[in-house]
Amino acid sequence: MTEIVKFLRENIKSEVLENEPMKNHTSFKVGGEADIFINISNVDDLVFCLKTFKEKNIPFYIIGNGCNTLVSDEGVRGAVICIYSEMNKVTVDGCILEALAGTPMTTIALLAKNECLTGFEFASGIPGTIGGGLAMNAGAYGGELKDVVLSAKVLDNDYNIIELSNEELKFDYRKSIISEKKYIVLSTKIKLEKGNFDYIDGKMKELSQKRREKQPLEFPSAGSTFKRPVGYFAGKLIQDSGLKGCSVGGACVSEKHSGFIINKGNATASDIYKLIKHCQKEVYNNFNVNIETEVKLIGDFE
Ligand SMILES: Cc1cc2nc3c(=O)[nH]c(=O)nc-3n(C[C@H](O)[C@H](O)[C@H](O)COP(=O)(O)OP(=O)(O)OC[C@H]3O[C@@H](n4cnc5c(N)ncnc54)[C@H](O)[C@@H]3O)c2cc1C
Image (cartoon, rainbow, N blue to C red; front, side, top):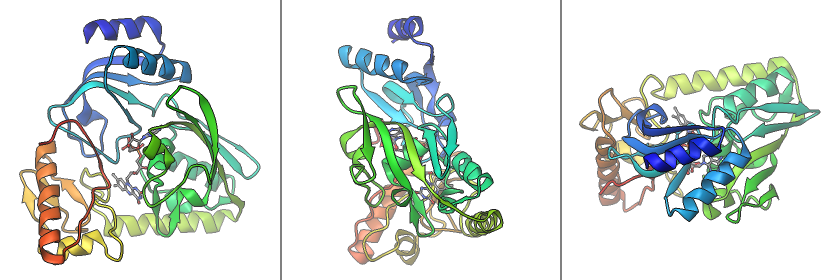
C-alpha cells in the first residue's frame, strides 16, 4: 500500500495516512488499522481517489464521523475515505441552510438556532455528519432529516455530480437512496421556518436533557445499536430478554438504555460484535423477532 499512499500524496491535497487506527475515528473507540485513510478536503480529490481505487481494484469505505460504524479489530484492508472535518461548512440564505457533507449536525443546529430558524431542533443532539445523516435518514424525538432536507448534491457511481430532490432521495426508516445506491453526499440544502430564538433554544435544551437522562452518553457507543423492529422497541425486547447489563469482555448492554451497547473502556470490536449476536439470538428465541443492526459494520467479523 505504501506505493499507493505515495502516489495519492503526490496527486491530491487531502491528507493521506497509512495504517491509521480506526479507533480514533469511530464513536465506539474500537477498530484496527485502515491500510489507507484519507481525510477528504475537496470533491476533485474524492473523484481522484475513487478512480484510483477502481483502477487498482482497492476496496474503499466512506465514513463521516464514525458515530454509526463498527470497525473490526483486524481493521480495513483497503481505504477509508473520511468526509468530515475538512468538508465542514454551513451557510444560510433566508430559511435555507446549505451544508457540506462533513458538517456536524450539531453545527447546523447551532446556526439554525442563532438565525432563529426552527425545524432542526430534533437533530441538535445527534452526533455525526449531515452526510452520514442523509445516508441513514437520521432522526430523533419525532423528527427525521426527510422532514427538512430540500435536496442534496451527490456523486453517483459514474462520478457525476447530481442534485437529488427530497423525493428522489427516497428517505425511509434509517435509510435512503444514498445507502441503497452507494452514492456519496457532497452537500445538502435544508429548508427551515422562521421561528423564535427562545422557543428553539428551550426545545434544544429540553431534548439534550432528555438524552442525558435516558442515554449512557458517558460511555463510547454508536447510539442505538439496533433498528426499531416494526411494532416493537429493540431496547425493550433486549431488556425483557434479561440482557440489561449483560457483557462480553468490555462490551456491555447499557444499564441505562438497553438499546445501547457500550464500550466500558477496554472493549474490542469482537466483544461488541459477539454481544450484538447474543442479543439478536436471545430476542429471537424469546419473542420470535429479528433485531437488525442500525450500526454499519466494516471489516471481517466472522
Ligand atoms: C451517543 C449517540 C447518539 C446517537 N443518537 C442518534 C439519534 O438520536 N438518531 C439517529 O438517527 N442516530 C443517532 N446516532 C447515530 C449516528 O449519530 C447517526 O447515524 C449519524 O447520522 C451518523 O453520522 P456519521 O457521520 O457519524 O456516519 P458514519 O458512522 O461515519 O457512517 C454511517 C453511514 O453513513 C455513510 N456515510 C457517511 N458519510 C457519508 C457521505 N458523505 N456520503 C454517503 N454516505 C455516507 C457511511 O458509509 C455509513 O454507511 C447516535 C450515535 C451516538 C454515538
